Amino acid sequence: MNPRITQKCCTMHEQMLKLNTENDPLRRKAGSVEPQCKFEIHLQDPRLLQIHKALFKMQVQEKLQKKEHETETFELESKVLVLENELVRVELQRDSDYQELVLANAWLSALEKDYQELSTQHLALKNKEHEPCKPSATEQEMKTVVADVSCTCFKRLLIEIHCKIFLFFE
Image (cartoon, rainbow, N blue to C red; front, side, top):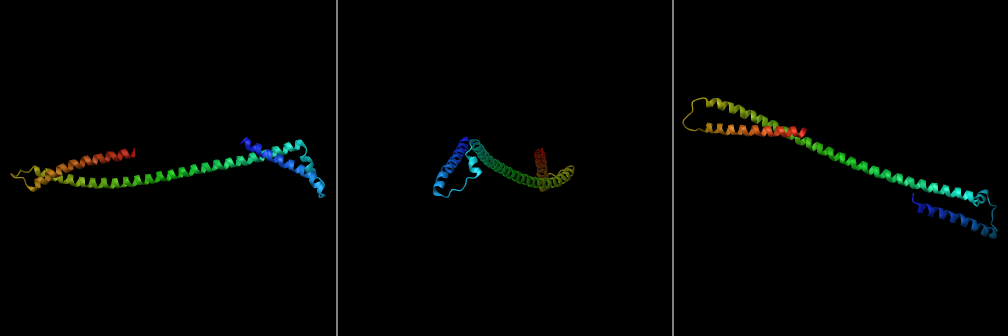
Protein backbone atom coordinates (compact mmCIF):
# COMPACT_ATOMS: atom_id res chain seq x y z
CA MET A 1 0.00 0.00 0.00
CA ASN A 2 1.26 3.47 -0.88
CA PRO A 3 2.06 5.44 2.31
CA ARG A 4 1.50 8.78 0.55
CA ILE A 5 -2.09 7.85 -0.28
CA THR A 6 -2.71 6.65 3.27
CA GLN A 7 -1.25 9.84 4.72
CA LYS A 8 -3.31 12.01 2.38
CA CYS A 9 -6.52 10.15 3.29
CA CYS A 10 -5.80 10.51 7.00
CA THR A 11 -5.05 14.22 6.59
CA MET A 12 -8.31 14.77 4.72
CA HIS A 13 -10.20 12.86 7.40
CA GLU A 14 -8.62 14.98 10.14
CA GLN A 15 -9.54 18.16 8.27
CA MET A 16 -13.13 16.97 7.98
CA LEU A 17 -13.33 16.33 11.73
CA LYS A 18 -11.71 19.71 12.43
CA LEU A 19 -14.28 21.48 10.23
CA ASN A 20 -17.10 19.72 12.07
CA THR A 21 -15.78 20.94 15.41
CA GLU A 22 -15.25 24.49 14.06
CA ASN A 23 -18.80 24.61 12.70
CA ASP A 24 -20.24 23.73 16.10
CA PRO A 25 -19.92 27.28 17.60
CA LEU A 26 -21.34 28.77 14.39
CA ARG A 27 -24.43 26.59 14.70
CA ARG A 28 -24.93 27.71 18.27
CA LYS A 29 -24.75 31.37 17.27
CA ALA A 30 -27.34 30.84 14.58
CA GLY A 31 -29.76 29.48 17.13
CA SER A 32 -30.27 26.20 15.40
CA VAL A 33 -28.05 24.25 17.70
CA GLU A 34 -29.23 20.78 18.46
CA PRO A 35 -28.03 19.03 21.54
CA GLN A 36 -24.76 17.29 20.89
CA CYS A 37 -25.06 13.57 20.69
CA LYS A 38 -22.65 11.24 22.39
CA PHE A 39 -21.01 10.40 19.07
CA GLU A 40 -19.87 13.99 18.46
CA ILE A 41 -18.57 14.22 22.01
CA HIS A 42 -16.66 10.98 21.61
CA LEU A 43 -15.08 12.16 18.35
CA GLN A 44 -13.38 14.93 20.30
CA ASP A 45 -11.68 12.28 22.46
CA PRO A 46 -8.13 11.72 21.06
CA ARG A 47 -8.23 7.95 21.65
CA LEU A 48 -11.44 7.59 19.69
CA LEU A 49 -10.02 9.79 16.97
CA GLN A 50 -7.02 7.45 16.69
CA ILE A 51 -9.35 4.45 16.49
CA HIS A 52 -11.37 6.19 13.79
CA LYS A 53 -8.17 6.94 11.84
CA ALA A 54 -7.04 3.32 12.15
CA LEU A 55 -10.40 2.07 10.89
CA PHE A 56 -10.24 4.45 7.97
CA LYS A 57 -6.70 3.26 7.13
CA MET A 58 -7.89 -0.34 7.23
CA GLN A 59 -10.75 0.44 4.86
CA VAL A 60 -8.35 2.11 2.43
CA GLN A 61 -5.97 -0.86 2.66
CA GLU A 62 -8.82 -3.30 1.99
CA LYS A 63 -9.88 -1.36 -1.09
CA LEU A 64 -6.31 -1.26 -2.41
CA GLN A 65 -5.85 -4.98 -1.77
CA LYS A 66 -9.12 -5.66 -3.57
CA LYS A 67 -7.89 -3.62 -6.56
CA GLU A 68 -4.56 -5.49 -6.53
CA HIS A 69 -6.43 -8.82 -6.40
CA GLU A 70 -8.63 -7.76 -9.32
CA THR A 71 -5.53 -6.75 -11.29
CA GLU A 72 -3.83 -10.09 -10.58
CA THR A 73 -7.01 -11.94 -11.54
CA PHE A 74 -7.19 -10.01 -14.81
CA GLU A 75 -3.52 -10.78 -15.56
CA LEU A 76 -4.06 -14.49 -14.85
CA GLU A 77 -7.16 -14.57 -17.04
CA SER A 78 -5.16 -12.92 -19.82
CA LYS A 79 -2.44 -15.56 -19.49
CA VAL A 80 -5.09 -18.32 -19.61
CA LEU A 81 -6.49 -16.85 -22.83
CA VAL A 82 -3.02 -16.71 -24.36
CA LEU A 83 -2.42 -20.36 -23.41
CA GLU A 84 -5.81 -21.40 -24.81
CA ASN A 85 -4.98 -19.66 -28.10
CA GLU A 86 -1.62 -21.44 -28.21
CA LEU A 87 -3.36 -24.76 -27.57
CA VAL A 88 -5.76 -24.15 -30.46
CA ARG A 89 -2.81 -23.26 -32.72
CA VAL A 90 -0.98 -26.45 -31.74
CA GLU A 91 -4.11 -28.55 -32.33
CA LEU A 92 -4.58 -27.00 -35.77
CA GLN A 93 -0.93 -27.70 -36.59
CA ARG A 94 -1.34 -31.29 -35.40
CA ASP A 95 -4.42 -31.72 -37.59
CA SER A 96 -2.52 -30.26 -40.54
CA ASP A 97 0.40 -32.62 -39.91
CA TYR A 98 -2.01 -35.54 -39.69
CA GLN A 99 -3.58 -34.59 -43.04
CA GLU A 100 -0.12 -34.43 -44.61
CA LEU A 101 0.65 -37.85 -43.16
CA VAL A 102 -2.59 -39.29 -44.59
CA LEU A 103 -1.72 -37.88 -48.01
CA ALA A 104 1.83 -39.24 -47.79
CA ASN A 105 0.48 -42.64 -46.79
CA ALA A 106 -1.93 -42.66 -49.76
CA TRP A 107 0.91 -41.66 -52.07
CA LEU A 108 3.08 -44.40 -50.59
CA SER A 109 0.32 -46.97 -51.16
CA ALA A 110 0.03 -45.89 -54.79
CA LEU A 111 3.81 -46.16 -55.20
CA GLU A 112 3.82 -49.63 -53.65
CA LYS A 113 1.08 -50.69 -56.07
CA ASP A 114 3.08 -49.30 -59.01
CA TYR A 115 6.19 -51.03 -57.68
CA GLN A 116 4.39 -54.36 -57.50
CA GLU A 117 3.16 -53.98 -61.07
CA LEU A 118 6.64 -53.08 -62.27
CA SER A 119 8.16 -55.98 -60.33
CA THR A 120 5.73 -58.35 -62.00
CA GLN A 121 6.60 -56.93 -65.40
CA HIS A 122 10.29 -57.13 -64.56
CA LEU A 123 10.05 -60.80 -63.63
CA ALA A 124 8.14 -61.53 -66.79
CA LEU A 125 10.80 -59.77 -68.84
CA LYS A 126 13.62 -61.58 -67.01
CA ASN A 127 11.98 -64.88 -67.84
CA LYS A 128 11.84 -63.76 -71.44
CA GLU A 129 15.58 -62.98 -71.39
CA HIS A 130 16.39 -66.63 -70.91
CA GLU A 131 14.91 -67.29 -74.32
CA PRO A 132 17.31 -67.08 -77.24
CA CYS A 133 18.14 -63.51 -78.15
CA LYS A 134 17.10 -62.05 -81.42
CA PRO A 135 19.80 -60.37 -83.47
CA SER A 136 18.17 -56.92 -83.55
CA ALA A 137 16.92 -54.77 -80.65
CA THR A 138 13.16 -54.63 -80.70
CA GLU A 139 10.78 -52.27 -79.04
CA GLN A 140 9.97 -54.87 -76.38
CA GLU A 141 13.61 -55.16 -75.34
CA MET A 142 13.85 -51.38 -75.00
CA LYS A 143 10.83 -51.47 -72.70
CA THR A 144 12.59 -54.12 -70.61
CA VAL A 145 15.60 -51.86 -70.05
CA VAL A 146 13.36 -48.92 -69.13
CA ALA A 147 11.36 -51.13 -66.73
CA ASP A 148 14.59 -52.30 -65.03
CA VAL A 149 15.71 -48.72 -64.47
CA SER A 150 12.23 -47.68 -63.28
CA CYS A 151 12.09 -50.56 -60.77
CA THR A 152 15.42 -49.57 -59.30
CA CYS A 153 14.33 -45.93 -59.00
CA PHE A 154 11.02 -46.87 -57.40
CA LYS A 155 12.77 -49.15 -54.89
CA ARG A 156 15.04 -46.30 -53.83
CA LEU A 157 12.10 -43.89 -53.64
CA LEU A 158 10.05 -46.28 -51.49
CA ILE A 159 12.96 -46.79 -49.12
CA GLU A 160 13.36 -43.01 -48.73
CA ILE A 161 9.64 -42.53 -48.08
CA HIS A 162 9.56 -45.32 -45.48
CA CYS A 163 12.53 -43.76 -43.70
CA LYS A 164 10.89 -40.32 -43.66
CA ILE A 165 7.63 -41.72 -42.28
CA PHE A 166 9.41 -43.60 -39.51
CA LEU A 167 11.42 -40.49 -38.64
CA PHE A 168 8.20 -38.46 -38.56
CA PHE A 169 6.67 -40.76 -35.94
CA GLU A 170 9.71 -40.73 -33.68
